[in-house]
Length: 127
Image (cartoon, rainbow, N blue to C red; front, side, top):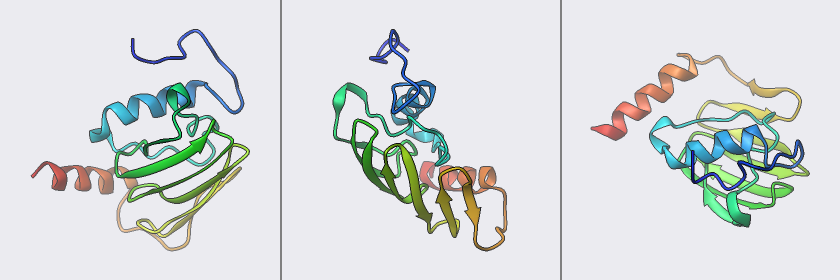
């Protein structure tokens, strides 16, 4: 992707890295409704030093200080706080915790796999 500003730069922490690239692409194609896991260090490193951007899912917003400190609030990702690249949060939509080192921890069983739920949401938005 030609617009990606870090094609010649890589840093494992706090970014830019492969998760930064994935989040960058997801923000440009919000129809994908990408929900990157809390273990994806670098996903919160925003392009060109931006402080505010759409969440990778395209369903909310994110503030970030170079991927080291920030927060996001989005329908798909829920409420997430980022401290030193570690993400902690609550996914109200899926009733789950988002924890560093563990990823998503469901608090109650889901009725459908997340792929099907996101596909349903995508279909609703397209109608």
